[in-house]
Image (cartoon, rainbow, N blue to C red; front, side, top):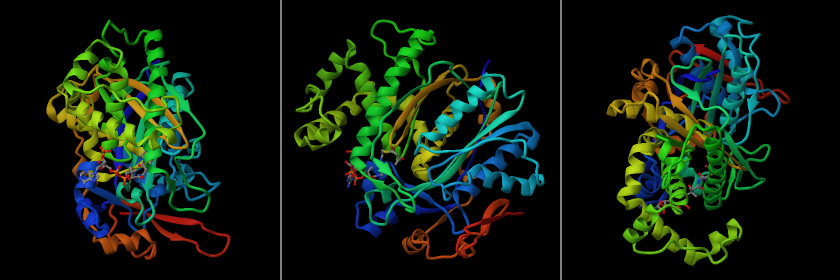
Length: 463
Ligand code: CAA
């Protein structure tokens, strides 16, 4: 049975910080954000927004656009790493909000949980719900998987340049118009790690930045190795001599903590895949240096990062590799369009990968690329750490969905924050009711009960 993504909707907060203003405020060169990381703007939540109302807003958009009633939805999963309750699941808040529009009890049949594994949990939720459909348990109903996050780091930390916020809702069913997932190829890699984590009670994570970058690459590569074996053994991809699995993936979407991490990941995976192929000889000749090897090739991530000579040479090699015509062709045709939204919005943790997918659909369609029947690969990564690699095929009906995609109009009119306004929001100096924007046709938070032992949240739908 086919199963996959029928439609996709986004909700992005309309406040943002401009990368150049941010850089000036921190005494940084704006080019570090704009060119080095691929960050131009970072979406920031208003005082009356939390990840639950971002998720509810994306859900409402997808339900209204498809004229769905609550009866049509069999499961509603919310994946997040910005959870504000250790027990009450975020989907319960979302259902509470949706019932303000659809009537009390309208979703009582609709099961689901909140899933957590840093940025990768949305991919696990998609996989589980796809299998619920494949197993015939859905009985004609759809599943809603919503990924929603606020990426917030300490003021002055290196992570602060890679913030953002937003939510992506995906409607899954057995007759998807957008993308049908390839069966029996989803592959994972997992390891107990401390690259990025947020202990109980902390609003911002503890981050080992460069360690997390390298771990992301290693974990995704391992998951890709497992995917490769499955894709070949199931027969969905047949490799000829001098071919790699990436030659058969038309578009690649990577987890994007910042846009250039996608570029880093593509370069790393392509190098890994091409290294053993005849074409590599030509690449090495063009670069004019052999591929650097760490002093201890079997060493730990720390030992590789500490091997300064190797790191510098590897950096130089990567830069030259990414300038080759061969790499540029892969980058432009498979990845570039997925990075556009990330540059404008920033990190969305669980939602970053799917915002990237949404971005590639819109911008490839605008270029006139023929999309039906093409294979899309996904490289998902969550710190702590796990990677997931999977794929799907764009369906003939995709145009029904993609023709109306317009990132700018879906975000709506944005308000640029001054660095002082941004810092006041960041440091929670304003109350829930001190919002900077007037909400319109959206759910907002109206109160967090501050009496001891409470913490209950109230939301309204603003007409
Ligand atoms: N002009 C142009 N480019 C510049 C520049 C300048 N003046 N100064 C620096 N750059 C370039 C650097 O060369 C570098 O590019 P390359 O990697 O291509 O060489 C880029 O800008 C970034 O510079 P640094 O590596 O020196 O930056 P940093 O160490 O200060 O911070 C970071 C980068 C580690 C990613 C940091 O922002 C961070 O900790 N972010 C949070 C953690 C994170 O995003 N990790 C990613 C993997 S984990 C994950 O994916 C889960 C998740 O969502 C968090």
